Length: 147
Image (tube, rainbow, N blue to C red; front, top):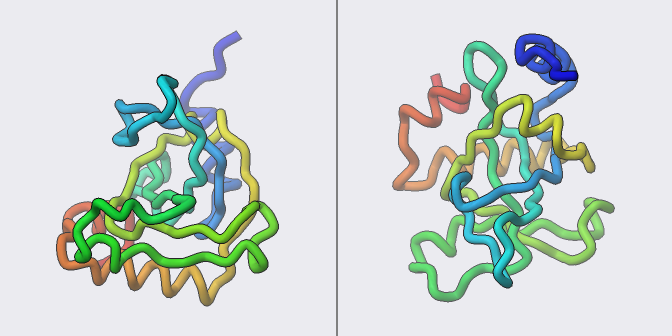
């Protein structure tokens, strides 16, 4: 039985909060590069905002380490996150604050909520994302990160 998308949107929008962390499956179509010959990859997605309709969420992804091949201007916007502060992490990680990924409510619902970022870290993440020099104002505005 297929669940109508409007019902999914309503249920998810009632439950998803800013700072929630979801484990979701992503592919090349989502803008990530799967490893080891796989078509998809599980990633931790931090909800930073949502569109006016509340059915597309903007977020950033956790990385285990910083890709050293990236330019310094991008590496500088990877925020360290301690596994001690967040039990869902098995090791210290980094949040890539240079790219906002969209996720539909259906995509989040297929995943699993694994935790929530605390308020002070969330505000630091949000300001880091917004201060990235190559951030696209239209994208920041779409997800309510700037007015």
